[in-house]
Image 1 (tube, rainbow, N blue to C red):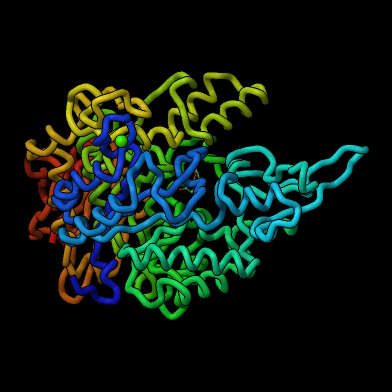
Image 2 (cartoon, protein in one colour):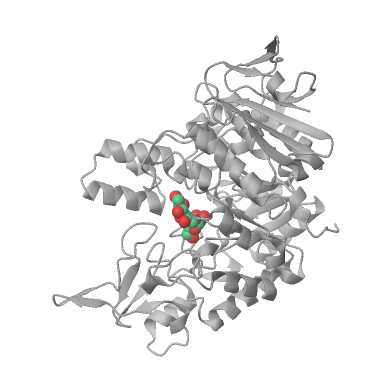
Length: 547
Ligand code: TEU
Ligand code: CA
């Protein structure tokens, strides 16, 4: 396949969490061969790239986001030759493989950290960030108050070295020192190894943290961050035509443009998380639940669509391995199928590259686990411990975990209605959602009203559509509390999306939108919408797309 410079603007990406995708050797853990087996299924959604969550060697404190060897595949997932085969088999089907690069930190089992923390004169000492503690009342305390994203101090003392090292995540994920040119060169060399193996791009984990200046309290968007990213670009992906997407939890549109404007030679696109912060109490954490601020939610999309139009490029997503399931979060328990289709419609007809997370396409939901014993994620377990210790009630803590824990996204893929959902012949590493008897790929495939078949239609429609790729974005009825309506216009063509984001009926003045004689291209109800005297009446969670 020959690729145009910006091929990723026409792409649809499917994200795979390998350990939960498909197990082919009966150990209860998904593997690379499982992905090879399902490539035709993935292609059936017009997908052209797969983002693989980390598969390199790892002690799995944070499920692969703590890497102990950047070059080799963890044996639970397979071997390098499985990876080479996956790349080749995917390529045959027009699919590129996007590798997840965790460049902000390593595992504490990585030889660099093992060296840095166990030998006094190790050449790897300055690969990490070390600071003296402060003596207060004869007691040693961390260099400053900086907190880990997973809870507790971001500093851990090492007896042998006599200093604290920095970890913005778990203490077994020490932060790399990007100010050390040897660190940067070692990482570039590794990235070039993956480029030579034939991957189509990278997803850069927490890339906005690499410029941190911890002693000044700076974590994201540090003073040298863009300089480092430009150097990274020049030394690695500049020569190949790659899709490079950065994860930036705190990006504003202004910040985002600095990463993605093409003359800056940094990244192709970013994951930004503004819409995901609109169902939590302002200024607090994701665990502090609050109902979705729907009007702000719409305006957030409007802001990002307009800010990047003609200058950068957006990603479009409602799920990933860190987020609860989109239907459970924003959709409706009463109308799970309609709301799953509606959410896909409003997201994926915007400008940008869609990222579909495994299981989303069949409408997979949260787990609703009420007991802490059912949770396995390090973030969830730390949160539980610290809240209970601070005196919060079990009920309150569980409510937050049920709504927001990352475990919700990580249960095994639901392939059929049999035992273990067809994911494995043995007990899976993490239990399957009980609703696999109803929500699964096998049934969805043959049901023409399924969420899956709707995704196929929607994504095929999107593919190659110039209005969706290039058109501008106008939000209508901004302050309406039920309706999400927008138009996309390019040259003489226009697409209108109308979506009733509620369990009630919703009236739309069709004259306002001049859509009277529009042709309906997509709809999420089996029967036509109701219209009378210049008004369209949308049923609960009904959406229609008109040209
Ligand atoms: O996530 C970045 C990150 O900051 C998340 O931990 C986020 O704050 C949290 O998930 C919200 O619940 C990336 C990876 O996507 C995540 O899986 C890793 O745990 C993390 O980096 C550390 O590598
Ligand atoms: Ca396996």
